[in-house]
Amino acid sequence: MDTVARRQFLQQACSGLFLLGLGARPALALSESDAAVGIRTALEQGAVAAVSLLGRNDGFLANPRVRIELPGYLKDAAKLLKATGQGRRVDELITAMNRAAEAAVPEARALLVNAVKSMSVEDGLQILRGGDDAATRFFESKTRTPLSAKFLPIVSRATERVALADKYNAVAGKAAGLGLVRGEDANIQQYVTGRALDGLYLVIGEEEKKIRQDPVASGSAILKKVFGGR
Image (cartoon, rainbow, N blue to C red; front, side):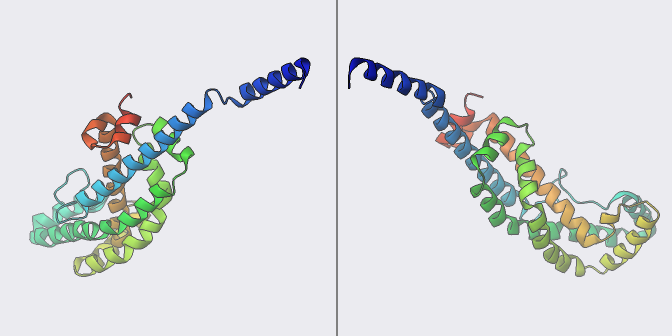
């Protein structure tokens, strides 16, 4: 190769490298890869921790942030029932609703972990750059529909053990017709399923926020690398 041809070749090669960004690209690619791995690790840890916290006795019932109460008008009506000596039956229903949620939550673990494992690099970066509820939005978009289908029969079996459940559906149905209760809350099984999922995503978000704020406490090197400088 003569001098002119060699010069042209080198100019073209350097130009190509510049346009492709290969000089800076490896570090960037590694950073994005680390970020995605870190987010997956954070989400999986958060999901597993949330399931462990909620999917046990009193996981919902004793936690005021996620405890499932009667909705809207029925909550006020429950006060009147208690005043007329029906308090024990109301308490039984509330306990049954929360026990149903506690029984259903462990079913979420596999779906949540699979959602994390199938997450793309782009998903991970969006969550990393997103706000404190970015993880919650991701999980909800990927898992709410299939989890609803898994939770509903478990919740149904648990609430059927309480005789007041049928009465709840009858009263709530009438209340919904009057606009006193939302339509989706007029069925106890669907109501509890929805509230159980709300509580699950809330706690997942809280666990992820903890990891973002204190990655060192997680004991994971990749989390320290991704979140340590944030």
